[in-house]
Amino acid sequence: MPKIVYISGAVDAFYHSLAERLHRAGATLTEDPEEAEITVAIGEGASGDVAIVPAHVYHGEAGLVVRIHDLLIPEGAVDWGTEVLHEWADWVKEGAEGIHPPDIEVRHWVHVRDATDALSLLILADTDAMVQGVLDMSGRRAWTPRSVVEEMRMLWLRFTNALHHSHTIESLTDYPSPASSSHRPMPVRPDLGPLHDALLSAGGEGWRPLVSMRVALMEVFAHRND
Image 1 (cartoon, rainbow, N blue to C red):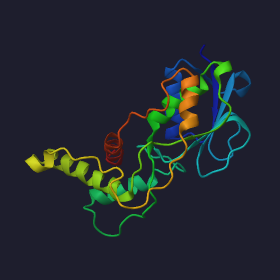
Image 2 (image 1 turned 90 degrees about the horizontal axis):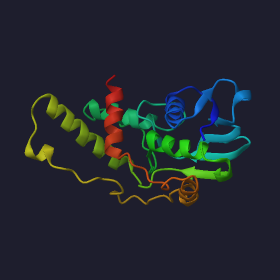
Image 3 (image 1 turned 120 degrees about the horizontal axis):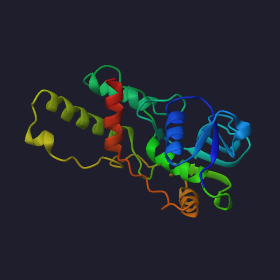
């Protein structure tokens, strides 16, 4: 049965994405926490029935805590870690010249649509199916900085070739995904088993992110052109 949900936290692209997804799932959103059947708090120090935080910050008291690692928000949002992708996108657009944007460790990027699809299922689950405890969320595939930049270069080349009608057979050839192609040691991925099981218990199909990195990076470029 649909729930009345109160959301607190910074009103950014992630907040709007989650609110819109809950609304589409049938939830009624309220601005009064006293009216809510379930409270959802976002960001550092978040406390409520459900707390959703970037993995690198602390959370407050909550029945369910979801720590999101490497959240990819094409529009950009402070504190979630996507900022470096926007820096790389600008660097690639400028011809990959000048000072290289800062390097980072290997990431398991997860698109905000996949994240909010899963979160809405957890938040709106029947009371007897509501999971308690701490869940980690991330993408399943590891991406090195080099792999992401190579993918960006390919996408930007295709865009500019289409714009100037300068495609060649080589530029239209399907590139294999460079995910995990680097020899850099791969970090341990967050344990996604508890999240997968929680989504199954909530009536879903488990943790199965659907948005590809290629689509996500195209959306990053689109927002950088706005």
